[in-house]
Length: 315
Image 1 (cartoon, rainbow, N blue to C red):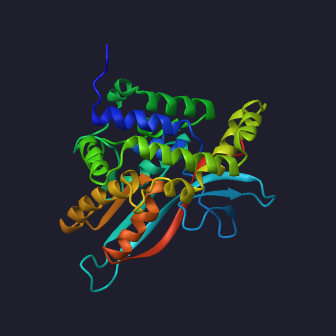
Image 2: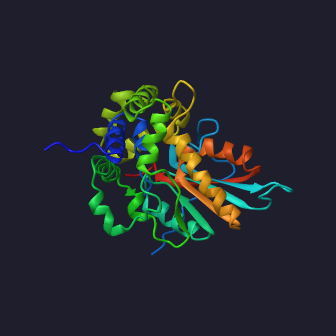
Image 3: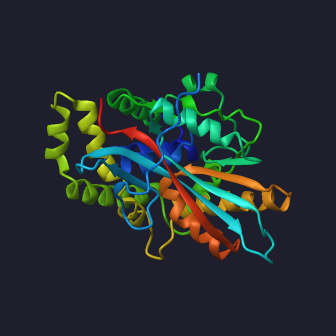
């Protein structure tokens, strides 16, 4: 029996293809889903040695012996400049990877509870809430792959660990129909987008060891640890992956289009008087969001803190 090709199915199928290609795995695919408190992740010491791409919101913290210690994600605080419409208001860009350690998501839940409003990503109908009991019904190809990756790496799945039913959470993303409409408006398609991402993902994979490195990690005695080290090197190359998304005019739906929708809702929240708002999105979205805060909201970056998402020293 032939399945009907709905906008949601088209997005899921294209994203599933992206999952198969290197660096696109966590940023491209996971971006289509938005998903006992343990000790919070260790924040970077001032003299920590890190590897990151300029302007990235993911990085690898290293030990004094130059060994990879942790994959980290950023929380970047912006504050409205004096004499502007949002003077003194706080917007934190909270970058996230969609599979991570239990401690990572526990700490994020604790932080997110402190905001007046948390704007979260999920390509779904407006107002969608993610209930734990619904996750079992969402076992598409993509979510199954992500679940398989989290099991292989000894990590947890974001959608299963973040409390999306919290009262301060608000859905701030495109619906499937809006996603496809935006692609069509620009003469793009999910398949063209997936093809561009495949090229960018393969280039990043080749630069970080390619298939040989992945195979060596796979057959290592410490497979989970070495696979995390390989994948973390690819993940920090955010610029390479997001560059692969752009069409000939430098536009794309997956990052820039969805960010525009999110920031329409951010404006609504700030105009309603919210003083401290979090934008809780995949780290690949944050460079464009930072530009929007500076240029459109007249906000200034104040500080950045880093959280450990993956421990790269153990399985």
